[in-house]
Amino acid sequence: MAAIQVETIEQSKEHLSLPTTESSSTTPGKEVVSLSAVGLSYGDGKQQREILRDVHLQIVEGEFVCVLGASGSGKTSLLRMIAGYEQPTAGQIKLFGRPHLGPDRQVGVVFQHANLFPWLNVRGNVEFGLRMQGIRKVLRRERAADAIERVGLAHAAKLMPHQLSGGMKQRVAIARSMVTEPELMLMDEPFAALDAITREALQVQVRELWQQSGKTALFITHDVDEALFLGDRIIVMGGSPGGIATEMRSPLGHRTVNLSETRSANGYAKVRDQLIQLLKQES
Amino acid sequence: MNRKAVLPRIVSLAAVLLALTAWWIVTANGWVKPLFLPSPPDVWRAFTDMVTSGYKGSPLALHIWDSMYRLGAAFALALLTAVPLGILSGSNKWVQAALYPFIEFYRPLPPLAYYTVLVLWLGIEDASKIMLLFLAAFAPLYIAVVSGVKRVPSDRINGARSLGASKWKIYVHIILPSCLPEIFIGIRTAVGVAYTTLAAAEMVAAVTGIGWMVLDASKFLRSDIVFAGIIMMGLIAILIDIAIRSLERKIVPWSGKE
Image (cartoon, rainbow over all chains, first blue to last red; front, side, top):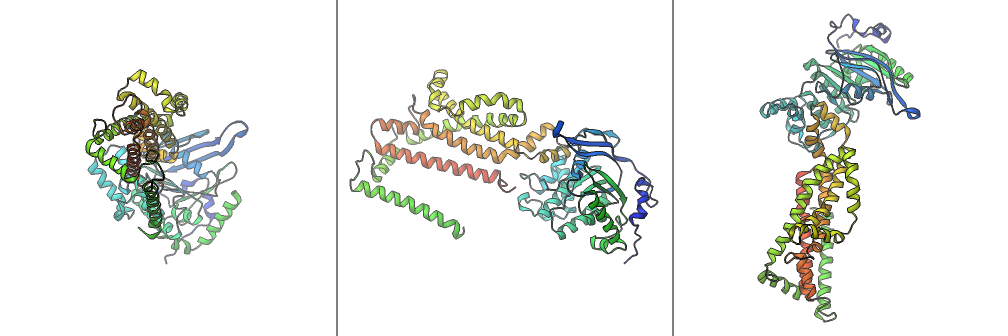
């Protein structure tokens, strides 16, 4: 196996405050997501519950950012605000340099539960975004077929969602978001409910698709291995109210072929333990 | 079909046959007067008579057709109004707040109580009958659609917006199809309620219709025709329900499997 240069958290900590200064990274691209002093609370008065406080986050074009946190750390709320489903109660969110107003077709979302439209078959689901954009049928068919093919479901294009397994549903959800070529893909623990084998196959697939597209991705997970395998940059969330506890460049980011290679990489166990310790402290 | 599904059907069939046999034995031995319970052969004869020579000047098919026309027209009107209004009410609390008092008020009223008012307003022809059936069908359908809209998962709407659907397109492409399973539940209830109101609607100033036929025959103590009519009404209701259910399976195959 190729020797893999692994930084420990100690070494990577110097990147924590200046994440884009890593020598091996390419020149900083356009800013896709920018959160400054973002907070989120529900309710008011005595009923008020603060979910997130003072979140600062910048994501540049082409990055694959994993948000790692225990349940209740506010990571899903963070994603929902970036998706435009919820408005921050403090601070500001900018997307592509503009104030963020609401859901946008430049921001694709894959949910934890595939959230397919049950009355449309696989092809209909994947074509949905193109149809909403008024793309004509022939072109729509072609692009949907290509997206379905790329997630390995060409044989299932005419099946209805209730006829699919959990893993197949998520593949459809990924194809449905990807086919409209959004600049930013948000994924909210999309593989959390899947078995280990399916999960691993889909992780590899997501990374390949991301590499082919060259777009930006934000991926939420509570799984340290998943974060280490997929992310360029790992953001650890925690605290109460939630916030970003720390962030690091993934020492392995995209240098391994699959999860088992990630696991056997030199120094992997140490980084993993450190991340788990961090998660424990923060939860 | 496996054995588990067949057995209950055999039991149902056996129970029906048993009831028919009991009916036949009781009447064949003269234990009950034909006025109270006509014998199966008499009922059958009444039925074949109606098929061949009609009832009171109109062929049986016309009676059935007139009833089905009233039911169908009322139901079509209910569908065309209750679905859009239900979708509007489900997504806008002001519209719902404005409509609810009226629906909550008339819904529990016995249809016959306000039928005379409808006759006064709309005349004794089909219009008042269709209106009565329409009112009976509207409420359950409207209520089903409203609850259907409220049960659309918010992330389904969010997901569609992220895929570029505008607000108007969300109604047509997300909310309406999402409600289809509830709409079908509403349709089955609405048709059932309207059907039971049918006989009442045909009591006033009608000269055709199966409901009228049964009521008219009872005035002349023609129990055989009354029985034949009731059995026909029951069978037609079953056929209508079978038709709706097969349509439901075809249109919302995902219902209950999400």
